[in-house]
Each structure stands twice: as structure tokens, then as C-alpha cells.
Image (cartoon, rainbow, N blue to C red; front, side, top):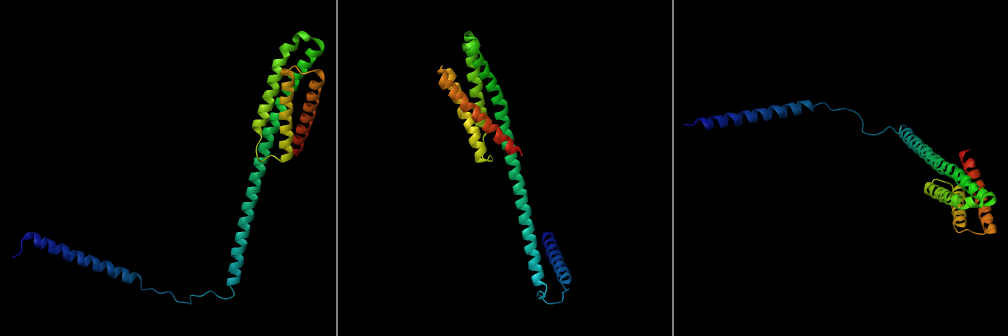
Length: 192
């Protein structure tokens, strides 16, 4: 005689076997349709397919190249704007400060010491600002012109701080003026 737990276990085992058989039957029934036809590509369609794939690849490459060109142009335009605005605004302030110093040298020697410090500071500030704005997307011509301004501004600052003689000071000013003109001309050309 069986006890109750053995009977329950037998019923569960029978239910499990019946459920598994039903699931197998559904799987077999679901897979009875077979598709007819040949498993080969029609000879005339293969070249069309290959041409379509090639055209898609070329179009994707051209689109990618165009996006990269636009991205590079945008980076270059931003670099030009940043550096040229730094040059334009800071050089104007530096030149104005130097002009006050020159006016004091010519007309009011008592004011030379008062105007020298601000001129040196404005020149060094402009040099630092322009040097810090330089980046790889700039053309080498523009970068060279901006670096020439940086060097010339520091040269005039050194001449003022060192109380250079008139000839040496005027030479430094001439280099500064030429560097400014060249850099601003290159900036104008880069905006076009």
C-alpha cells in the first residue's frame, strides 16, 4: 500500500510527462511548413546587388567625408575667431597704453613713470592672451603672424621696462607696428 506522499509524487510525475509531450507536439506541429524554391541567387541579379552595395558604401563615405569637412571648417572658423578677436581687442588696448607712454616721453617727462607700468602690463597681457588663443586649426601663416605680434609686444614691454634708449625703443615700436599690421591683415584674410 502506498502512502499519500508517494501518490502525490506519482501524479506530479505523470503531469510533468504529459505536459512535456504536449509541448513537443506543439513544436513539431509548428515546424511542419517547408518553403519551396532554390537556395541560389539569380545570376542576373547579383551584379545589380553588388552595384547597389558599392553605391551605398560610396554614398556613405562621401557623406561622412562631407560631415568631417564641415566639422574641420567649423573648428578652423572658431580658432580664427578666437585668436583674431584676442589680437584685435588686446592689441588696441596695448597700443593705446604705449601711445600714452610715448606722449609722456615727448611732452611730460614727469608722467613717464606713471604711464610705463600700464604700457608694460597691457603689452604683456596682449602677448599672453594671443599666445594662449593659438590652436592647431589655424594656418601656419596666421599662427606665425600672431606669434610675431606676441614677440614684438614682449619686446616693446622689455624696452619700456628696461628704459632702452630712443633708437632701440623706436626699433622695437617699428617691429610692433609691422607685426600688428601683418597679423590683422592675415586675420582679415582668414575671415573671407
